[in-house]
Image (cartoon, rainbow, N blue to C red; front, top):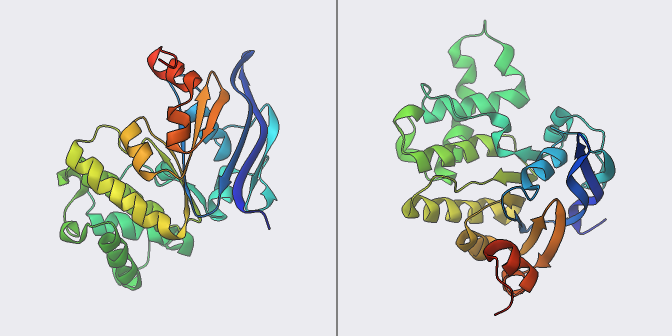
Length: 250
């Protein structure tokens, strides 16, 4: 079995003749944190949409856990354990943290559709919901409505709802966007903890976070892979320096 849980080969996506992603070969090693970075317009989000099947590639292949998922539906991919954080949607603002996580737990059981059953039917999910809230540091917010929670804690709640699907691999799209320093530190540690027994692929603009968390970094520019390696390796690459800062190796 391959040591890589996710692989793309010559992944390409055209929009009206424009190549948003062109010939991307990506190999994500199982059990690692892999960052996908690059300047604005580099094709990072398009790559995420292709991998999670929100977009179909113009050409190329995608393999996950040894299976070709190039033509697989988003729903089927998620059921196989490849989960993007926003697939559980933004949290429901007027539900409590517990209710948000419990609702996510209902999806695999089919209880989401049992509207005629009494609320007591959901009590068996409470224990797991409490465990997930504790895992992301939200026990004190159990009975707090999401709308009343600080922004960083809402992002932690989104991760908890994603974890409810028992993902083998999580794709996080800019998990630190809009956060202050304290929240960044808290969510960084959370990502480190949840990555202990699963694989994480993330798009992130905060290079300090990327340097701190990532085992491997792939740099995209104009839809193509510009460089790959550890943070130390890619940060010394003159082409990467040029792409980010407009300066070569000076």
